Length: 155
Length: 265
Image (cartoon, rainbow over all chains, first blue to last red; front, side, top):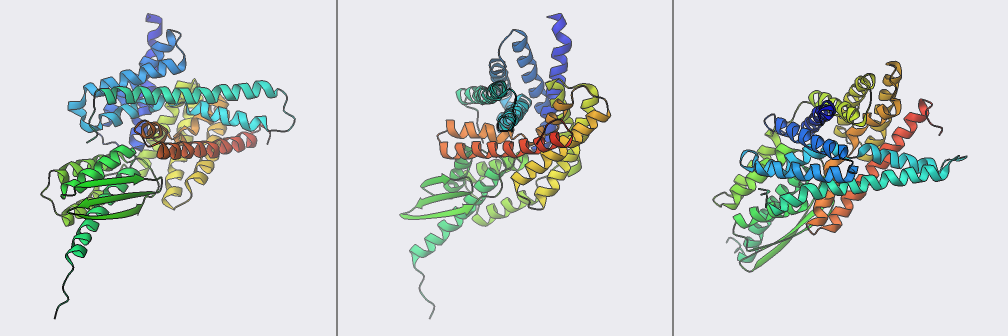
């Protein structure tokens, strides 16, 4: 566990930076941005621990989204109706955009002339696409289930 | 002699003002990144705050419709919705206004003035601040994907420039999908060239991380939320929009990789 700490810290710090950066893009106020960063750090920390326990990316992302959603729900009094948005901003660094790009680039490659290893290219592209679908589903479900069960107010 | 006013017409005019004002609030929420159920609840709260008995709504990707019924009178109105983005502070401000209106005691004129004020005065971060923040976010994404430190710097610059140009293009009304393709090409090229110049060992990852500003995280989550909340049509429309953005972004990266000799066209 101790040897995991530097990696865990690295992922949490960059998860926080990514979440806060996207928080600025989403026009969160300066008071909400530290909460976005904290949510991002928590999400990436949980996902990293999950992956270190040999969970799949999808499973670790689901656990991370659940923990993040429960945590922001516990802070409802401080965050108000914005708690769901803070949880979402925290989970943005887990959105598998790079896999999405790889999947589409792979599909584009399959149609290229003189393709050498079409099967391997196609399988890689399909794997990436499935990973995107399942991971997005896991993040969405992980965020929504606690918010619905704990009856977070939208207003 | 003054013409006698038909009371039904008068009541219809009142209902029309309520419906249009509630739709305006709903449109702003929708354009600011709210899910369909939030928009419906918000519009319903505002309309009921003016004594409307029943509110029925339908949401499309580009329009909202509301039917309000009060005192035996019913009208239906529709409003166009603009480009869907994310503006957290404006979204939350309109939600707070909906709560205030639902308690009663405000006139239609007051609410319309308040909506106009919120649209005008809700603060936004300056474009350069957003650009730098997005650059940092892209570079951080890159680190999470495993890029090395030279590539981190390249992505930071590529993401910052990409976001600034994207802001200018969208501000000038350029089509959002064309913007996605152009910015993917620009950012991936800058990220790739920077990574090569800085002797990075993760050039392809750097190019991919440089375009992550384009990944529509909120719309993809909203798509799921809408489907789970019972609005599969809107959820599907959002999902198709997400897919189209990523297709254009991927084509941009494809051309950038071809330009840098990493891939053949």
